[in-house]
Length: 472
Ligand code: URP
Ligand code: ZN
Ligand code: ZN
Image (cartoon, rainbow, N blue to C red; front, top):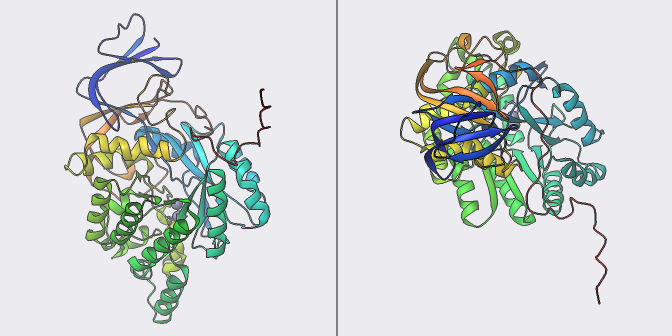
């Protein structure tokens, strides 16, 4: 063995038990009550949890968006990820108008490869709904990208899909075994509210939230679910923020539909009170922060298994970048940071406060995201043969969150001053220690692009096989 993680409490989505993990060539090679170290490096994990690393399936590093670019690049963002116990992320390759989807993928890989410090993949975000794009979907899946994002808003960015386009992508993805994720908000109602508020001289950050009430998200989710039901396809709702959304997804799943939802720490912890006062300008994100009842509804959704994943929608923006919207809330660039605090917040606010079990934490931050997006069992599990992407998590560690003790490229944290219990002691990526006590000790460029495939045969995604010769 190259390394042994000793005496830890191993936690998967289904089991918890004390054992040693042996690591060889970057993979988990043995799990046993006692593994003799011989000359292997030993990590002592007594009284600590040993988890499959968190997988953040929703990030936006160096995203050009709303007349600026998100503040973390692939180096700073992925370093911060490792410090907080995230061992893989999925960012987006956003198609340019009239250009191929694969071109967006190749361009994004050029930006990330050789820089990322942890393993990563990309969702293909479709913005051009031509026949040519639809015809490319099987090729993208074959390449190892089986998930697509469709924006139901963002006309100004040129990203928005109308219902016909969403319908067409759902049908095509169904035939090829892909998964379609949506940004679900109704743009027409937002635009109507925005125009009214601006006309009335209402320009402060609080009007960002008020222009996008819960029904703006709920209507779009229900429309996406409707088309999913009609097309008999599969749907993933990115960054769900409302209690109404939880109900819609729960009802859809009870009807047997393959509808999955993600929420983010900001929707579990923060409320629209953050939009008030001078600091309010630092909080606009889409969908916006909601009410306490929504936070509670989302926690219940996680407890009940209605929500499948917690990811971050990590889109950091500095105080200076936010100033672009000081006189007009529609010009405040949208997005919140979070990749480094994902695991500690779900532990501290979820497990330590009795809302989730440790197994549920692993389920929503690692195992289910890996399964949904085709990374399982290489990632998201503690099993022999899996990548040794492991977090040794110290539940006794205490931290007070501040941008100054975090590694994201920011002068602001939405959780400034929040005390959390629990922090990763070690983060391992393919058996290499990337972070120790929350400090990065890894290597730039260590991360690799990971092609993703579902274990089941994906009809339409693979080249037509020659029919076998009949044997007589
Ligand atoms: O406001 C947000 N969430 N910005 C990032 C882009 C997106 O819609 O996910
Ligand atoms: Zn979105
Ligand atoms: Zn996003």
